[in-house]
Image 1: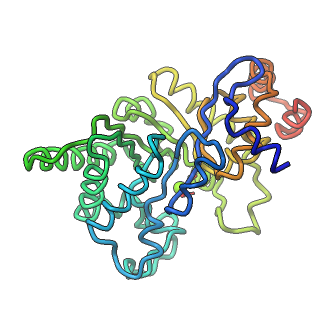
Image 2 (image 1 turned 120 degrees about the vertical axis):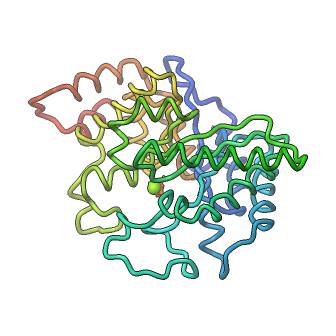
Image 3 (image 1 turned 60 degrees about the vertical axis):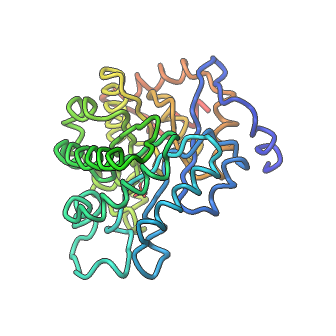
Length: 322
Ligand code: PEP
Ligand code: MG
């Protein structure tokens, strides 16, 4: 099987009925980079920058961050890299940084909240990314956004860093793409405003699922009671895809959901054309989509999602289709 997937590396990810799908991989450390070539991923759809911080014993300095990002871009060799700004807190612990115990860390002082309260930390990171991507393309996104005002605030800081660097004669990235991660349900009712502010949106399905279904992503006692393939969550994802179409904003998804073959199929069926997953999943997902009649699947799923008195689970419907 491994050999079979390997053989698909250079095969274009196009469904049986001709839809081109973008298959990206998730990464966070330099050791992940060779997986780009190994897996045949088109690029990196999620680069978790907090990993550099999590494995360090002290806060990485500005020049260390810059050197790291430069190295990542160099090793990516022109393939797109989507850097996510620091996502510290919640399940991502940086021991030298957090001093306070929180009763509900998943809902606490984390990610963008922490970054906006410590703007020095965020500005250092933004500057490091801008410098590392001088004369290159820079794509970045912000985790755990709850309100559009937060994404505006980050964009302002980014603008300040751009101005600062150009004032001092530094080269800038020749293209800059700025995005938001959709992980908090409150953003679902701000999609049009959000999409007017960003170049792309990336669904963090691990957190969006956890918060939508009120099920702790790390707690095995409850995880198998709630299936992301059930109607409520797939309807949420379908609404996001529709908002993307309405606003002409590219939408992608980078949670674990994209890496399981049957869920990846469901995502394509509701309209995702770009997904990011762990590198080991690229081969199996590509093998699935090469034989997929996407138009037929979309019709089946559309009807099944609208069904108000369903007699089969979505999972059964998908398995039957496969
Ligand atoms: C997610 O929440 O789906 C996601 C991609 O981010 P992380 O798993 O790093 O929280
Ligand atoms: Mg997340």
